[in-house]
Length: 251
Image (spheres, rainbow, N blue to C red):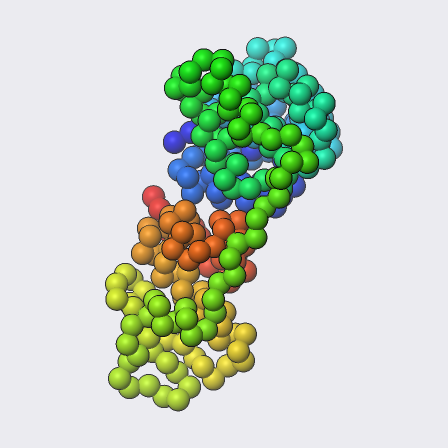
């Protein structure tokens, strides 16, 4: 487990990165501007920092330069931006940034960059050549294919029910179907079919994801693989359905 600081003025990005990194087993602190980031850096030791470039008080490149000149840049810093130029990325790397990620950030690039940064910080990378390779592989120049791929649409309705649910209960009213699954704490689930289609579908999807979260011990990575959804889409879907992620997360 690593201690990671996420610095970004957008609440949605902070929350999403925090959820993903927490799910990977890391401890995450959040800062919405350079002032909070400075205070967090003084009070804590971090293994890695994710730092947004464009912020309202002090931009990320200036903060990076502050840390470098004051001797506080002793951890890998991954810069993030949706509007930076190649010159900005080169400047940040020259100051001491480990790599650069362009928004919107794919989960694959995020996790790869974090893994490489932590490997360098723990001394597992092969010197400066390894660092340069990590920057080349994880960053990608601004404007080059950093859009988040859309996840596969979940198949709602008959296919979802027949694949993951067992035999229907022996006694049921016309309005209620009782489905049984073969294992896990969600072994009995009732669905009220006497409702509008959208409500019934949402109820089924919530139970479907809760079942898989429980069966996979709260691992979002394995749930994404099982359900065929890209992780960013999966997080949004679970929040939309009101699934309690905190309750299902692994310890």
